[in-house]
Amino acid sequence: MRFELPEQKKLVHDMVVPIRWGDMDAMGHVNNTIYFRYFEVVRLDWFFSKTGMSGLAGEGVIIVNAFCNFIRQLEFPGDVRARLYVSDIGRSSFDTWLTLERTDEPGVVYANGGATTVWTDYAAKKSKPMPDWFRALLT
Image (cartoon, rainbow, N blue to C red):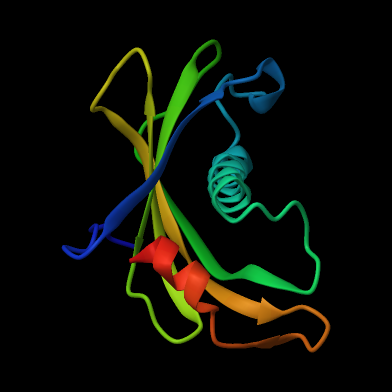
């Protein structure tokens, strides 16, 4: 999948995630599944810090698809700077886009990816329109 940040995107979160020894696999680089974990950590840190929500009570966001482009191998030790963007805000969904770079190599993207995120009523297991207060965080 080709990665292009949409023109109408908004940077909503920037954080540093440490590369842990246990993130590496037998090949000596960060395992491909861990990149998705980094994406998850960044999305949740943004969501919980901006909404004040602390768990999955009642309603909130879920991911309905996710992708990652592996550009360079991340290796221990080091820290990853992750940037989270949002775009394409709809009635109940929006897209997230992420870039990962090492803090000791600013501007060099090691991976990028994204996900479509949907506001959901957890009990009903159905999407629902996102509340106005949440939409305001995205626009």
